[in-house]
Structures are given as C-alpha cells and as structure tokens.
Length: 501
Image (cartoon, rainbow, N blue to C red; front, side):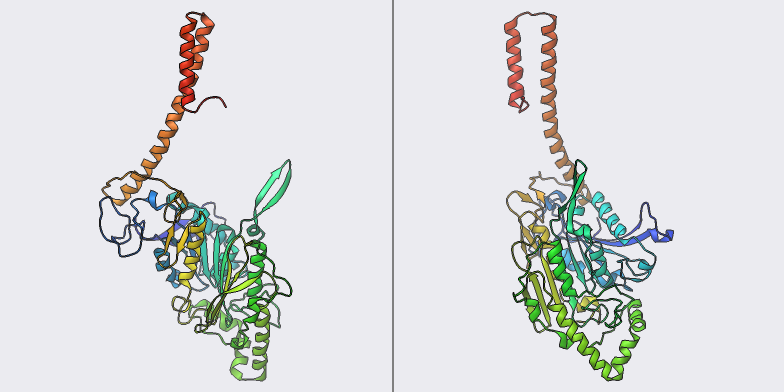
C-alpha cells in the first residue's frame, strides 16, 4: 500500500455541462502508521518485530488495532495547484490522519461567491468531495465519512464553508461564506403522523483564520456596495459581512453558544488592529488570482500609488470598518492565544453550553501568499491538531498535542479511540497487505462464530419443540420419558439465553 497516491476518477451520474468536467483528480496521503513506505519507524509492526521507533508512537500490529482514522480534506486557492497546500501533509502524517487534496477544475472550486471557471460553469464540487468520501470509505476499513474534516485557503476557505455539512469541523483560511447553510444548523428531520420537525444539530467546530490586512478577501467582507473596498476575483455578495460577525453567527446558530450580555465587555472589541489596514496588498504569486487582483482593484491601487488625499481617506475608512468588524456583539468570545511578535490573536467562545469549538484567529500576514502559503501561514500544525483533538475526544480520549497521540479510556481502541476495544490474535503474515486481510478476516470470523453459536441453539430449540409436538399428537406413551426429554430441552435452551422473555 503506497503512502502517496494520485487518483483520477470519473464522477458517477455526472451532470456537468462539459463531459470532460466529470473527470476529476485528487491526491491521497496515507499516514505511515498504516501504509508501506519502506520505513520501520512508524509503519505497522509485524509480530516479533523489535525495531525501535524514533517517534513517540504506540505500536500497532494491524489495521484492526489502528482503527478508524480522521479524514482531512485540504482545498487550495483559486489559480493554485494542489502542491500549494502541501504544508499539511507532514502534520497530517504526524497526527495519523488521512489527507486528501482535491484538484479544482481550471484551478477553481465552485463555492457560490468564488471563483472562476467552477462558478461560471456551476460545477458540483460539493458532489465531488462527497464522492471522494464515499469511495474511500468503501475502499478502506480505517476510513469513515462521519469522521471527515476540511481546511481550505482562499477559494478553498469559501469551499469548506459551502460544503460544511459534509464535515465534523472546518478551518477556513482567508475565505469565508457570509451566510450559514440551514443544513449545517439542524441535525435532521423527523416525521410522526405526517408532522415533521427539524432536530437541533450537534454542533460543528470552526477554526477561522484571517488577516486584518488582507486586500484579496477583506476582513470587512466582499460585496457590491460601491462605498466599500473591493476584493479580488470578482468576489461580491449582496451585503458585506465582517469576518468577526461570521464567527459570532456560527457560534450562536450552529454551536449554540451563550449570548454575551449587552453591557458585558467582549474580548474581541479590545483588539483594534485598524492601524495596519493600509490598503496595500502583497503579491499573490498564484497566477490567475494575482491577475484578477490587478484587474478588479485597478482604481484602488491607483489611489494608493498616487499618494492623494483619497488614499488617506480610504485607509481611515478601512480602520473604522475593521474596528466595527472586531467588536460586533454576539456570542461570548475570550482571548485564547496571543503572539504580539507575529501579530496573532485568537478568540474562542467561552461557556459550557457550546456544542463545539468556535475559534477565530486574526493575523497580520496579508493573504498568506508571499512568498507562498506554506511559508507564510503559521498555524498548519494547529489546524491539524484542532481536527485530531476533536476526533480523539468523541469517545472521551485525551489528545497529546506534543506527541500527536490520543490516550483512550479502557473500553475504547484504535489510534483515536473511535473503535470498540478489540483484542486480536497474533499472526505472522508474509507481507503487509496480506496482514490487513488476515486480521480483518479473523475479526470477522470471530463475530461470525458468535452469531453461529446463537443460531445453532435457536434451531436446536425449535427442533425440540416440533419433535415434541409431533410425538404427542401421534400417541401418548411413556409420559415420564417425555417429561424428562422436555425438561432437558428447556434447560438446554434456557442455559443459552434463548428462553421466552
């Protein structure tokens, strides 16, 4: 089993306008804990293998013992290639997560407001991501769609929020939807006697990242308002919604967090970063998005270069808007991380009523594109840890961020405590792939054996009953003998737990 795989797939029942758009590509990165990459430091250990591990990793001898692993999607920006977001590969491997990097058609994804070819041709990218989930879940026993997560940058940030219903938690970076899909808020529809109600959702974690000096996707929102600064790539909603307001809405509407009192100070309101909104953007360095920025913001850059009074007024307007964006009322957020040296401040919803974690981090790094995303974005590890911690804590595990490990309670098994504890017998396979098959077959045979025993005694009880009735119908002889036989049958059936309830 190879660790790194490039997959070309044909989307079933595809309804795209251009048949060629039904051919899609994604990259799959399996963690070394399960794949065969020739390394003995973190791969599956065979029985009797005493090779010392260089990592602080537990020893797993089979896929059965590894259990279910989180599936993480990483979605690139508009005009970018899949390689632009490779910074997550090493962190996913360290945390034992399966990573998928889909390729957008013409380097774009259809996320409603953004971007390019995919939006213009109404490409079903949500369906594309769903197809990847389903196919991988069917192919690998250690992947389940229910434990999927997604991080996206720029166009990818818009995309993960647009497809949020597919994931347990998301992390949009430099891109966000301005409204929340109703399907994300509810937990399903239940009907009784023709009366249907929507059940409340169980929450969905969000880890937002945005720079206060981002001129590609502005923290004050991207909209058609002629009085607001424009964003790149023709990104424009009907109304401008600040990034902080989106975080507040998500915490309240999706995660059910406690509403802050009107007279209660909000930690986010004290973080006035407007002085850094100078209206100057860094070079995108990503082809189409850079060109779009130049075309769509010509008037803005002209003012900046001229040194005119309008430039100063534009800066002040941005400052005021940014202050309003950071101080909007809503859910109670408290400061959870501060790094003044790098200009990073994070806020997390407080209170015990939140169904899931809602965190937003404000940066001073533009669009995280100069010189490139991998070098500029400082929280790649933290994003993967955010997902891994969520997966680990589903069944009361404890996540160790330093070593990338999940400590499980006594009744749970697997690398993330997502499985019932199963004690498997030692086997000595000739190769790793056969080991996977043998171990899964062994587990399956144990379950089949238990079911077979129960079925045998059930049939035996039925046989005794029929035999007894037939003999009693023909004639009554030796009543004492029949009584003894009936008593023996009853004792046998009752001893196996199949007696009448």
